Image 1 (cartoon, one colour):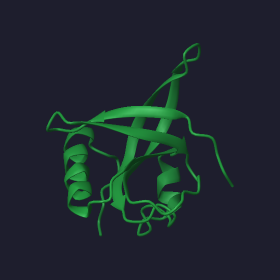
Image 2 (cartoon, one colour):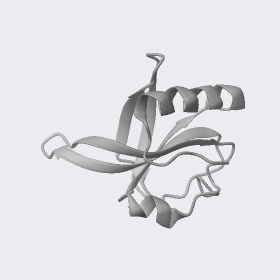
Image 3 (cartoon, one colour):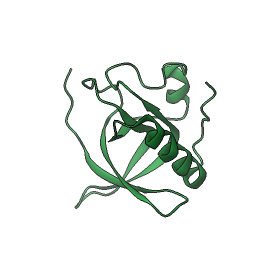
Image 4 (cartoon, helix red, strand yellow):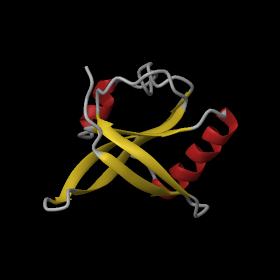
Length: 116
């Protein structure tokens, strides 16, 4: 199933670096692309311009977005927090992705922590 992208959201890490993430409905199937991603509860704040905010539930990285993100985490665990959105920032370099995840976790304090 192909779902329509919502738009973009800018995330700022503790370092001050900014990362532009594409946002999609949770459950969207992606092609094989390496990326940093976060799962969130998306709230539309302003209906005229469709501005939204995100409550960050989980931040992770993967070499293949076509696989279920956060495979070690049950989807129902995301749903307990009202997850409805997945956001991604494509990057092929694993070390860079890991640095971005650390940077974002420190500044955004996701509701769920990566355990594996």
